[in-house]
Image (cartoon, rainbow, N blue to C red):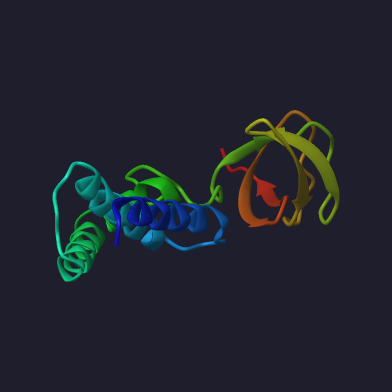
Length: 145
């Protein structure tokens, strides 16, 4: 294949990664490998077609096993110190909130609905502990001091 065919293949694979809902970075490494084979051809490194496909496969496999997991974890939230849930954090309650009632609060720069799942009233101006997150609803209970 010509060098520009590899470049087009690489661009298509990288574009497909952007359009895929959750391709988990497999297409990124395939696209980069195709682009590298195309770049080698552009630089004048002449390879028979079987060698191009072998280089493509080898680059893809090496990049999968070397870089994919760490990159995927960093981008998707598996990095050290990242909390996937906000359960256990505290929110400021603006209005009195009886057991089972809902209200609106601002938390982390976003408006949330809070639902008191405890048995007592959470008074205005106090803090509540998030026990569960359901969409944009925070289930809260009175924070123990």
